[in-house]
Every structure is written in C-alpha cells, then in structure tokens.
Image (tube, rainbow, N blue to C red):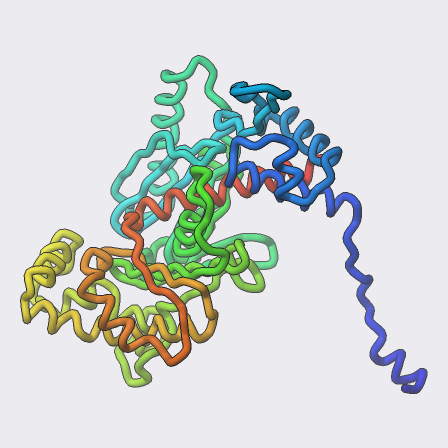
Length: 409
C-alpha cells in the first residue's frame, strides 16, 4: 500500500484502552452484582466467584461499606475454625421511586436497595402530563410520609424511574420523549423533566417492556437468574412489546432508547393501519383488545370483559376458540421471528393470555418450531403491572449504583 493510501485509511480516532480506573469500576460492578445475586457472602467467596484478587476484593468491599451500601455480620459458628464475616447489601441504605405509567392507571412505588417494594400508590392516569406530574408529587409525599411514620430515621430517596409504553425518542441534548398511541397527550413531552421539577430528584424514563424483562432477570430478591439470554414477550391490553436480555444485560439499541418493538413488526402487508404509521403490525392481531373484538365486536373491550372471554375458552366455548385461533396463528409468527432473529435460550410470555396457556401451548409450538430449533417457550404468571414496577425499581438501583461506581476510587 502506498504512503498516500496509508494516509487515506489512517484513523482520526484515538485508540480506546482500558485504564486502571476503568478496571476498578468494572470490578466494583462485578462485586455488587455477585452480592445482590448470592448474598450473604464472605470475602473469600467473593474472590473465588469473581476471580478478583483477595486484596482487591477487600478494597472494594471496604469502599462500598464506607458509602453505606454493604454491611458485614459475623456468621454463626457451628464448629472449630475461624468464623468469617458475611457481606450483604444494606437494604435500607437508600430508596428509589418507580413509576409505572399506563393508559388507564399509574402506580408509584418505593423500593429499597435490595429490590423490595415497600409501598405503592395507584391512581387513574390523568389526561394531561402536567396533571400527571401533580399526581406523582401527591403520591410521592403520601408514600414518603408513610415510611417516615414507620421508621425513626428513613433513608434518602436517590432516583426516580418512569416506566412507559411506546417508543422512546432521545435528542442530542439528552431530552427523552415518548411516542405512544395509547397516550397521545403524553407524546413529545419531556415527562422526566416535569416530574424532576416536582420531586427535586433525578428522573429517567425507560420502556416498560425492557424494564419488565429486567425484573424477571434480576428478581430483586437475590435469587439467581435462570438463563443469560431470553426474550420477554408482553401481550398487553392494546399493544405488544418485548424486552431482550442478552448476556445478562438488557439490550436497548445503539442509542439506548429502545429495542425489541416486536409489536410493530409487520405480519400482513395488506393489513389494517397501525398507530405507528404502517399497516399490518403484529400487535393489531394478538393484543387482548384485538382478540376481544373478534369475540364480541359490539361490546367495548375492558380487562374485566377479557377475563370473561378467558373463562369461556377454558370452558370449551367454540365461539371463544374461534376468536382465539387468529391470535394463536399470529402469535406463532411473532415468536418464530423472535427465535430466528435473536436465537435466545428462552422466550417468556407475559400477559392475561398466560391464564389459558395450556390451550395455547401445543398450537403455538406446533406452528412455531422449525426443525432442529430448541428455543423454549414458557409463560410467567407474574402480572404485567408488577413486572413494570419491579423493573423500574431495578433500573433505578442500577442508575444509583452506576453513579456511585463512577465516584468510587
């Protein structure tokens, strides 16, 4: 290659290398994750599980303890030999606020460092974002006052996360807005800024399907995640979403805005128009409202009505099963697309339809499984609202711990 050609292909960027500070931050994150998933642990166990040198483990644990994140207690002595100190999270070190915004209702909850939801407050979602921020402020004050009455000294609130449907849009200035057909008045509004001004706390907004996947992965209670790679498929009342967990991390796309909008993948080129501006999107055929319209088109959809439909399916109603058949067919298409694009170890289905999973399972798997493909499909019985709130708590904890990690030595 000529000198001229070499100059042409010369990179203008500086090489990216790991610094000692970067390695320390990564080690702290590994230690925190291990403690959250396996607590209580001794320092020796942390060194063994992490592969980090014992002296470095001691430095990290001492630093996190000084910041108030960890506590050490002497284990019970059941025999001879030195009894080790066991490390666990100080669950009362700080608290976070999780907000689940849905079309019909909004839930505000307070969670601890251990991921436990202590208290929650639900109200009807108002028509305007300004009213929404006012309601959040009122709910927050009620929850904080309740905790203060229960404790002589309540720990500080560190972070707020809003779980929202729709697609997130991030501009160059870091402003985040949503595009959600079920919440048209909330689209193109900086909800994080509105709520932050009301609560005087840092607020971030995140897609609810991704948060739901995080809640299943982390569980917030110290239990080990079952797999490293899975996709959570959410069949909602008026939409369909998914969260992608890849190598123990939520994948949110190149700009960390969204990924996994499987509900807006086209399954019928000549289908009905969708709120996203295209036609024939998957969610138009498999969401609860779409299934209900095939069952009783003259009766308005409601969650209570849909429960009646599910009862009819379980009772063997031919009319109910006829309405369900297209849902099964299109759901199989969506699951096949996910499996072949992502190749996850497992696809977890959530939503009201899981109540009739024994009816769905064989039909879905018969239409889905290509030869030699081994992706497992299984339901979760955890209600969607709970997934959203617990996922928001998990995301808030990650945000606080990441900030602490950056401040660590």
